[in-house]
Image 1 (tube, rainbow, N blue to C red):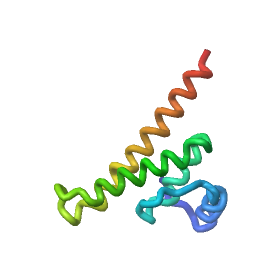
Image 2 (spheres, one colour):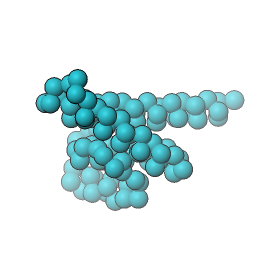
Image 3 (tube, rainbow, N blue to C red):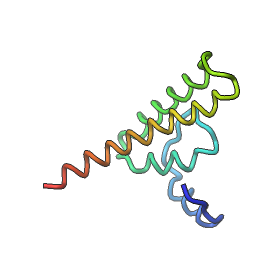
Image 4 (cartoon, rainbow, N blue to C red):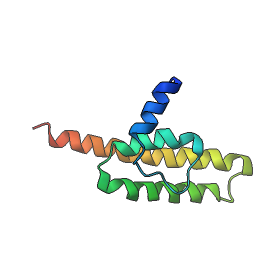
Length: 99
């Protein structure tokens, strides 16, 4: 996400006020997560947010990873999941209207 000015960031936060956040996520990713969740239909948002939390928690507590890498890996995997879900939804939605 590009660097936003303070006023742009506040406007964006205000427009995303009612988008649900996952129960477990890194606070630095909140705005990014909300912008991606907003691209999904409202009926899927909470379910996808729950999936995000599950992936984040599993990687955060993965004993095969070094302690210092766990948080970064958890963020990376959960964000990749969210990105892929939104990308697939938009791709399938676009194909429906390409008749």
